[in-house]
Image (cartoon, rainbow, N blue to C red; front, side, top):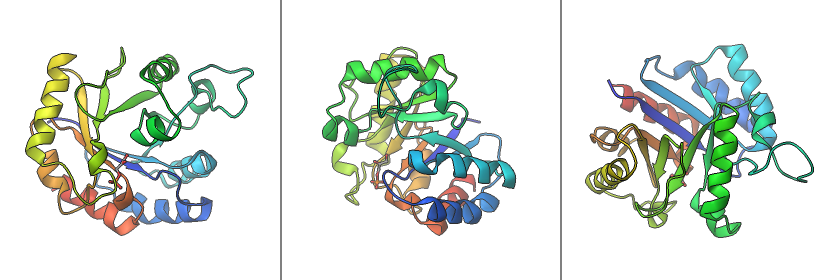
Length: 222
Ligand code: 13P
């Protein structure tokens, strides 16, 4: 059975108490299935408390970040290095289009961040907006997120997402796993993950609501 990733990208949302409330609702309801990998990516400020709550509750939930530093530890004010984050996270989102647009992140910076993640035992999930954006060396988990589908309620079709995922695998390696992101919700997730080349979803707004996120996980596991 193929791996299925369900990754919640909270973006810049939820204070610590809202984050813990979500964990206490979602944690006990996640279907326990070997091939199902459910990840929550809070803000940096909530990471530590979220990690603690998941450990205490023994929930089948992994913790991810939404970014990390292209540098190691040292004099890089404001940056969160992989070497320190790896006590809290197992995955990090990198190169999200919101970072490319708002912070002018280049493919080169994203490649450096990928190397930092890989060198520190963190799985890099690199976002590409189409099949022409480069996948950095060593990256084995890619999110196809077309910009026009993000936060618009206008997702790509499962068939087209499958074609793009297939092209990415053909271009780099068949062992790359591709997830889809952009207006995913409990009503469209099943059709997406049923596609041959799609290994899951990266969920933005629909992941903020605990009940809706539980529904997404349940629909996928059925
Ligand atoms: P929405 O699910 O809100 O469209 O956001 C997608 C996204 O950017 C996830 O990284």
